[in-house]
Image 1: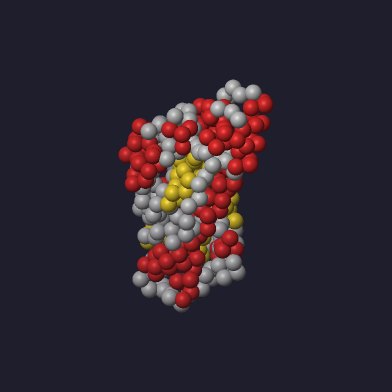
Image 2: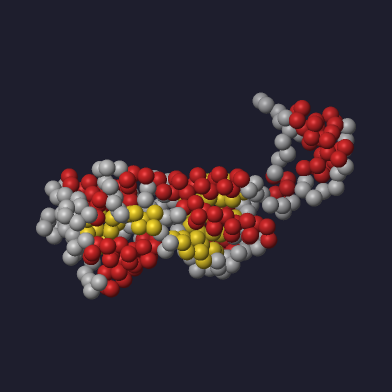
Length: 335
């Protein structure tokens, strides 16, 4: 069994006290340049790396930021995770990845996150219930939600303007000649889906349309495939245009329209999604969608993380909303 070098080993080899070794690795502590050089040289020889655990136990920052992901099946969030990981490490933090099932809340993982003494939590797609937000406030752990806004004095959020994007899409569908409309939802309780639905309703109402068929989805390909069929009791009743709460469901809907309903997309049914995942540009789908500026959203979230961890305090209710960009492709092309 491998034995790791200890601070005692380093002190013995360097010819200094163990407390001198501790001071060398403690930011802001007093240690002479000569002693520091001896300690670092001995540590290099022995392969010594100081454990962060004692510092955490003494109340120092862990420099751990928990990223809670609830939808790793979605390529959009895989890209978001990479952005967070690279940029957090660049500013001296390490990532603790925690997965919860999509549509579930953070409640079950809060005790674990508190025990790890994380400096902050970024919640991407996982739902933060009011109870969970209150519990995190009790532990004084700042929380930043990513596309999942929650009203709580300890919680900040960075999201795209889902509602405005959906209004734009409603206008596009009408301009393309659609007369009937459908919407495929995300999981119940998803703020992003709820904002997109609200915006789509609003945009249609502005065009004088009040009738909207809704089918329940789950942000997955299979959910879109199933929901598209639910929107059509027969091939003549399917809406002219369908807005799906994300791209994966839109891809499933297009495949169902073609393979199960015997219709064409976009000639018979126009379909649009949200997220602009790489697969949306594939020739088989050529999907109209909305691109979220993930790099900018991540940067804004990290500004909040940096502010809260440096001040050891909540950032308060910071709300940052970033515009999504319409990416128009062939799936909404008029026949």
